[in-house]
Image (cartoon, rainbow, N blue to C red; front, side, top):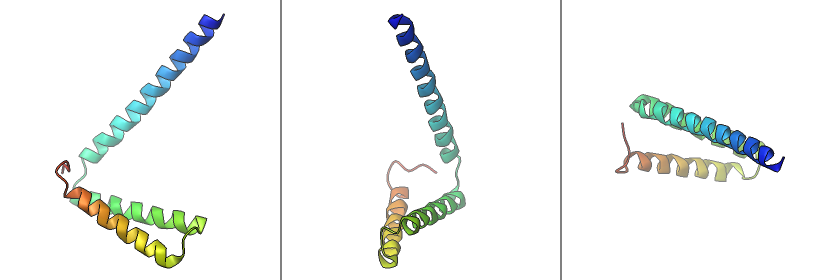
Length: 87
């Protein structure tokens, strides 16, 4: 009985891992197809998401929120210039 339960759980875990792997591969493929304007739009959208998260949680005062968003923008633009960046 335990062997059947273990086999069932292993099958479920393998299916879940495969689904996650497929989603990650799909997202990576979409990122590879991005052009310059698309990347900037995605970056701006991410900054807005970060702002909303900070404001909704009210963890940081507005001045820190602005500094945080500027640091994220600087970091992501530096990432684009990194050797591994593909356009």
